[in-house]
Amino acid sequence: QVQLVESGGGLVQAGGSLRLSCVASGMPFSKYYMGWFRQAPGKEREFVAAISWIRDTAYYADSVKGRFTISRDNAKSTVYLQMTSLKPEDTAVYYCADGMSSPRNWGQGTQVTVSS
Image 1 (cartoon, helix red, strand yellow):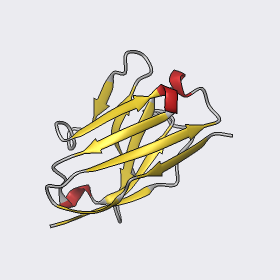
Image 2: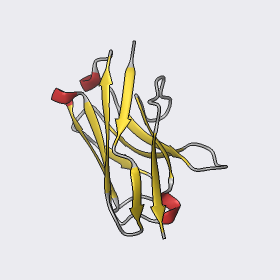
Image 3: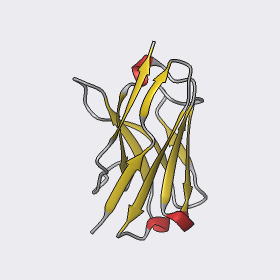
């Protein structure tokens, strides 16, 4: 079955950077859009970024555009989220998913906490 395993979360000061990774298995990774989503306490899960399997076209939420970069390494079945200029409002559990609009599979999530 499909497994998505995130890593790289942690505690960082405002203005700092983190890189999240998500390793996929059980799926033809190179043929899938891959996405990152996040859920802050008391809020609904929201879209952060996605990357297509054709020409690696990237899509971003307005709130992270210019600060976050999504990328993928098909040889490693891994998708990354480079996060810079982090803000306290970026604090959330970040999830990897096998899609952009209607993912079928999700990772377990990795906590990102940004202190002010």
